[in-house]
Image (spheres, rainbow, N blue to C red):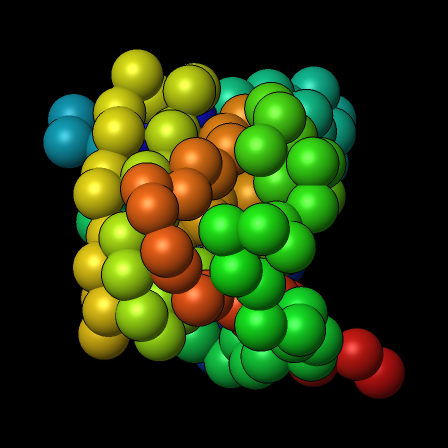
Length: 154
């Protein structure tokens, strides 16, 4: 899944890595012929790539970035109390992940951006990826809440 490059930094071995809009980091090494990123070797090249998309395999696996923690939780919603906004297309901000926790019943989770629909049942957790359009649809009686995750704040 493509994510925007937000920043560059170097690790302890002086290898460059990027921080992506999802919160994941990824090494970008110029080691031809297998890794050909000559632009990472100078500041102008790196600056030219800010905002560009880079594939994030950790997002493909729906892995919340290491170090992220829950910071907010909704009340428990039922099929009659689920806010209209959750039932319409919406997305979380860059770097904000969420987990949909099903306590009872069934909930249909539409990941419109991926043309994917998941049917979540009691005990299951749906993973909401940052910036991806989605919505939920109750299927009969249901009880669920949403927990939001982000990087620790300074």
